[in-house]
Amino acid sequence: MEYEPKIIPEGINTSREHPMRELFVLVSGLAVVVVVVTSLLAVSTDFLIQYIPLEKENAWFANETFIDAEVTDADSGTLLEVEVEQQLQQLVVKLQDQEKTGYRFTVSLLRSEVPNAFVVPGGQIFVTSGLLETVASENGLAMVLTHEMAHQYHRHPLRSLGRGVVLSLVLMVISGVEGGGLVESFVGNTALLTSLSFSREQEHEADLLGIDLLTKHYGHASGASEFFEAVLERPEADSEMPEFLSTHPGIEGRIDLLRSYGRQSGGDVTPLPEVIGRYLESIQNA
Amino acid sequence: MFDAIVFLSLMLSGYLFGQYFERRHYKSILQREKSSLRVPLLTLKTTPNGLKSCDAALVTGNVVVSVDYFKRFLAGLRSIVGGRVKSYESLVDRARREAILRMKEQAIERGAIVVTNVRIETSSISKGKGNAIGSIEVLAYGTAIAPYRV
Image (cartoon, rainbow over all chains, first blue to last red; front, side, top):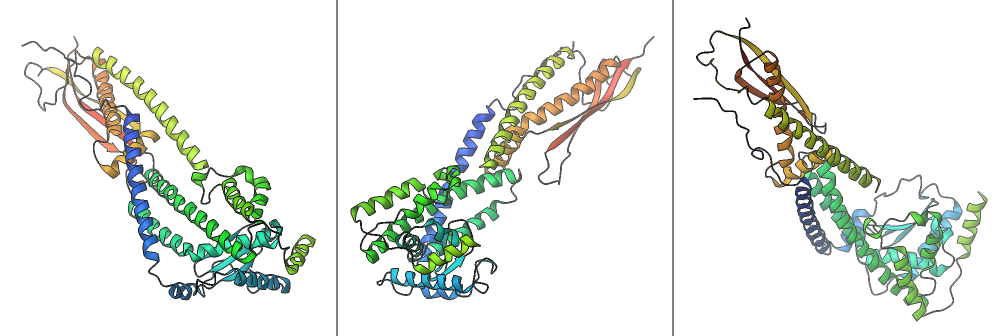
């Protein structure tokens, strides 16, 4: 028998499927799974948080130090800073929703040029000195405070914490998958983007309740959009992230929302408390 | 944001370069396989009868191929859901055939008419290095049988 060389046909040991097709199927399939799982977990933690009594939350976080002592004026603050803190505290007490009991608020001043305010579990509100410089009236400042208080009324800080814990657990489970950090970071980022939508939802809720509280106290909603308008004028506003990558809804949208309330019920704004004015002067002089 | 740009450009360059080299490599493989068809490769351990009084020598072909970023990502996704790791299949296929071809070319150079006892060995170069770029080595070796020169 004569040896007759033959060529082995292609495609036995390899696949003819286009790699881009495979990529598309895998990426979209996995993304859907991650989004669904993340959302389910986020919704269920959100749901369960309401069963944690408020007193428990307050007790857990009462003695927690959230910020390094160096930047707060907890111990190292000047007399003026302590006065400002007291002033803010009084304002918060006035702005409180009388119908909702059991909520405890404390205000701390942070030395930072970045205009920002946030609330942590247990109801501690942090306000930066940069924020005080940014607002023009007490109403503008009050809107920021009521927004943070609204977060606490909705128990958002604890909800976010719970969500964060659950999400990091999920990420821990998938870590160590073959293919290294690539897939891990893909899944992680998809989960993160999903959870951001929950964060934006919270911000929106806090804006709505915040403006409610503001209107209750002052009788009108003037000055509500003051802070965001000032933020928009800062140079770094141009580098704002697209909304889907951000923890907060877009600033323009929020201004529109707050302004629409201001138009419905306008009034004269209250000037900033005198002690805050003195504090700002002292910052500028320093 | 920056990470996303880096990731996407690595993916894109991995894809473009990877696909380009793969296509070029397959072209060369097919062409060389065709031109070297006349020398058969056998996995027989023993020399076929009739070739007993021939010159015999060890011939080897060795290849190391690296996986590209794109393929790696695909394989990583696969490791979650399971199934054929198609992106690596072509890589291993190329490495195996290239190693055989190199061995064969060596054999042809020696004037071989057949290569017997052909064996292929594959090893991972980056094994145990975690996130290191995956490379595989394929070694093909066999006994080249050539008639004595007179």
